[in-house]
Amino acid sequence: MEHKPLPGHIAAALAGAGGATDSAGQPWAGRSLSGDDAKIHNFEDDDGAADAGYRAALAALAAGTGDEAAVVASLATARVFVPILARLAEEGDALAGQEGKEHHSGELHGDKQADMALVTLQAPDGRTALPVFTSAAALAAWHAEARPVAVYAARAALSAVAEGAELLVLDPGSAATFVVRRPAVWALARQHSWTPSYSDPAVAEAVGTAAAGLPALRRVEIQPGGGVASAQAGGGQLPGGGAGPELRMVLYLEDGLDAAAVQSLVAGLNDALARNETFAERVDSIDIKLQRAAP
Image 1 (cartoon, rainbow, N blue to C red):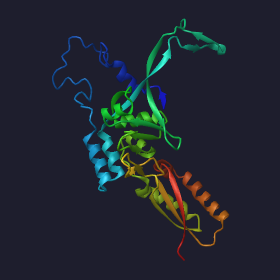
Image 2 (tube, rainbow, N blue to C red):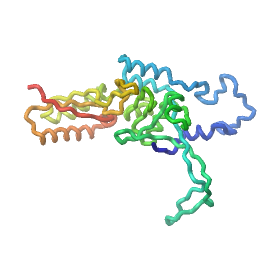
Image 3 (spheres, rainbow, N blue to C red):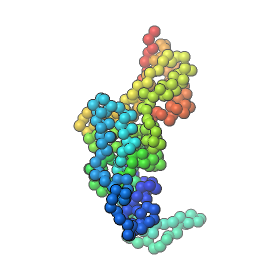
Image 4 (cartoon, helix red, strand yellow):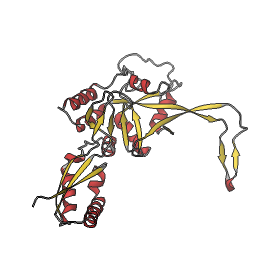
């Protein structure tokens, strides 16, 4: 678990809490905070429960009547909680001066002060992931000392992009963990709709174009990858929300190719796809399956 400096909008939300003025610098003194027109923030009446739309989309996915795209779409208007943890720092931190020497803003003391830091995780494949929680209870169960900061999921996605995190992990450690993979994180941050790569016509077209220059490759099929499904706490699997691989490419090869020819063909396909902007932007991760083409 790694602690990161806070993104500006989260730092501002924390810094303004409990102060003498609001976020615009206007004093609270003499102002009425009652009435429907006096909301302090977007989540004033929030009871901390998971968003109803997200819960419904996740239930539909589990029942086989929904899909990953609908779950991600439900996050477009959902509130989530970003966990913030205190990070201890010595008072009077050393300041790097000219000529590489250290200068101090004051005498160092043994006292410590706490900074609030954003938490990131490392996924099994080594990528950085930002954990977020759909309910205050889920966050408290994950880490009792974490402070919940309520934001829209799109803002959490922006934070993930800013931190270099390619994955957004919803409710880690809970009965139903859902991973939003890189292309969906980007789409959510930009408030665009998202289509999984395995059902995206633009991705299919990009793969077809790349394969057209390889005569020994008779055809290519794209399917959901082996990592699309996610394991759940109860031992079952959810048909979506996995960390990847996201896209499976089944390559049907002409008969008679030796190992060197197959390696050369796959390398040529990978090179062509790496230069395709649509494929690079819309595909998170792949696995490849080789098949002999029917005569």
